[in-house]
Image (cartoon, rainbow, N blue to C red):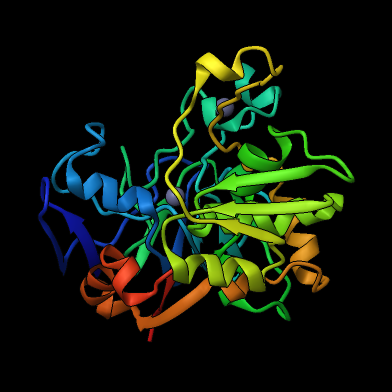
Length: 294
Ligand SMILES: [Zn+2]
Ligand SMILES: [Zn+2]
C-alpha cells in the first residue's frame, strides 16, 4: 500500500509500505477513505516530537471502512463505516476508567506517533472497540474527519477546561483549526462575546463567519505581574476524545458545521502536495486540507 512516511526532520515521502496486519485480537484494520493533516504533523516534520522515529507513517485523523477485525473485537465488523479517534483507549486501565483516555497506559496519542498512522491506504487500530466510532450512512464524511481530533480538542481543552458559561466573554488565542473548533463549540453555551486573537487577517475573517463577535490582531504576552490579582486560572490538558459521541450527535443533527473548516481538497495520493499547501497555511489561506481515497 502507499503511505506518507516520516524520514527524520524535514524529510517525508509517499511510498510503498506493507499493508498492516492484525497483531492483537483487539485490533481492526481500516481502509482509509478520508484523512487530513494536523498542525502536530508539521511539528513532527520540524523534529519537535522526538517520540516519532524515522520510518513512521504519519496521521492521527480519518474515517474509513473496516476491512478486518481481530477475534476479540465485538462492536465492529468488516464493511462498517467508522470514525477513527486520534486517541487510542484500552477502556480498562485506571486512566481509561476515569475517562482520561489520553493517559491510557497502553494507548493515548499513539497513531502516527509511536505506531503507524492514518495517512495511508490502510491503518491498524488497536483496541478497536474503544478507539473507533460507528457512523450513520447518511452523514457527510468530510465533516466527520473534523471529529477525529480538532473538534474534541477545541471543545475539551478550550471550552470545557475554560468553563464557558452562558453570558460569558470568551477570548480564544489563535484562529487556526483548533481555535475555530473552540469557537464553534463555545456557542453550545451561548457566550455573550466571542473574541478571536490572531495575526492572520484571513483566519480572522473566517472566524467572523463562524460566529466570532470581535477580533484582535496584535501579539499578546502573558503579563503575570499585572494578572496576579485578577483571579486568573490557567489550565492545560490533552484531548481525551470522551466528548466525541456527543459531538458526533450534534454534527449528525446539523447543529455543528465542521465542514466549513475544510479549505482544500486533494486525492489521497496527493499527500505530498497537500503537505506543501498546509505547511504554507498563511499564504495558501489553508485551514484543514482534506484527502480522499480515489
Ligand atoms: Zn492533531
Ligand atoms: Zn487505557
